[in-house]
Length: 267
Ligand SMILES: Cc1cc2nc3c(=O)[nH]c(=O)nc-3n(C[C@H](O)[C@H](O)[C@H](O)COP(=O)(O)O)c2cc1C
Image (cartoon, rainbow, N blue to C red; front, side, top):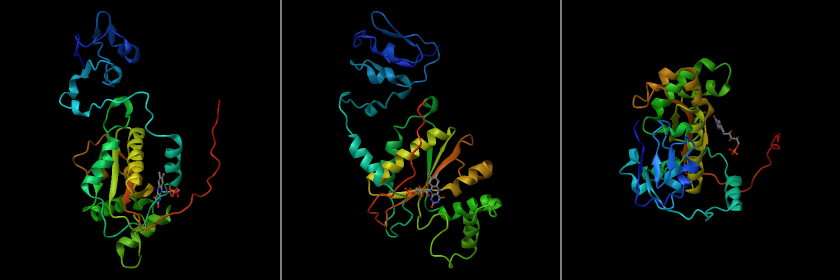
């Protein structure tokens, strides 16, 4: 069986922490830690992250050791009150500054946060597309797919009217004043949504804003195969599970609003 871990026997202190946190019972510790090679390791990295001696690395991530960052496990880097305040103040942004686009460096900062997202089975299969120059072309495809639902949703009808004569309306019925779009793909819906949510929060921390689009997502629900033709480089087994319009806000909100009571069921 192929071994996934590289264990430095000299460094190992046989403390057994790695064995304790391995959810696949793949490590045994006697004189030092040894991988059992049960074939079930999915490289979750718990053993790497917990080892006090730094004795374990993952073979398939060789060359990416600069990604390993030491930290004090007792240190709380974000206080609840500060995070809550941040979450409270966010709102969807639909009106953006015309002359200031999000640049590559800033996008990279957002994707860097998504890099640390959990994914189902640690697949790390979340992929993004930034639609910018090809936005009009993409939106025409979206319309062509979702127009079957025109009678059900007035927004789709408005979208069709807008495309036919874009001079009549000031704002795009789906994009408002947005002109950059982040799409998130994965085989697993939850993984994609988690990644995009983190990206969204980081965006707010950088003074950006945006909103999720339900209608763009409909294109994947209605005709996944056709939609994916626009993204030949993305695996067809992945779905577009999140569409986030992003940019620099042109409006500033100044207070929170009341929300419906949140229902929590303690069972
Ligand atoms: C899954 C999802 C889909 C959404 N779709 C749209 C959309 O298609 N168009 C839009 O303008 N806003 C969309 N929104 C934004 C919501 O309308 C917005 O979150 C809600 O009005 C609450 O306002 P707030 O985000 O400013 O707190 C969507 C939000 C979510 C979470």
